[in-house]
Length: 304
Image (cartoon, rainbow, N blue to C red; front, side, top):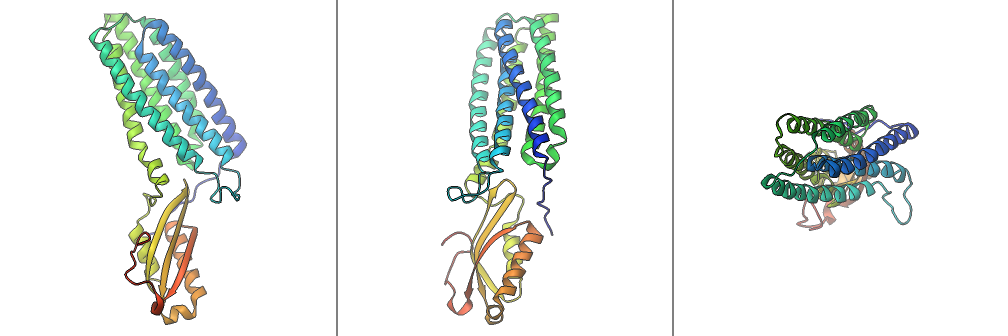
């Protein structure tokens, strides 16, 4: 079954401008929430600020990556510069995990001895955060359809909006009923949500950096498609990986029979067409072997 791996190209200037606005909006919000959280004695506000800071870092990563990824491949980076975003994402998610565990610890300590919290400050800053999160989500909404990275940012800002609603509810309960334990309880809830996001999404960058096969491509189906080509006896030493977020590459050894060896160029064109049309693999390197001189007992995947 064909797989569509094409992605819409975003207008660079318009996209960069939107992401830049979102960065500044989240930066100002983060500073305001940290200052307000310290003033109000609200750990929930500080937790939400750290969450917003992580999203701002993600926005910066996306912005820088959009710039750097446009650089062509050179003698130093023969695969191009697209993977810088993957490396930065791994660092970002690791930091998020550390922040999440720290907030759970601090929230637990405050549950034991809840401090006084200024509810009005919490409610007001929570409301401002909700507006900023909605603005950022709106700026990235039209861009997220063409980029998995921007879509992740869009979903993060929607989740931030929900966290801001939780902070507002917590501040309101403190004002109405003096339920000071609500603030650290919400902090722990936000921290658990941060951990959930980070732990579920960190596997993607790790898989890419470990040269894992793309998760949306069935490696066995790719092998079978090559084996089904006329003139092909077998394939081995298959390597399938992601060079960048939207670029999949393959290299392997292809064993040909006598007929395939006689028309090697047409067999190569057939295999490359099957890879591109069926799986979106536009970059493939094929090494051909005649069945009478092929590797013996070679492993299907890897170098064995």
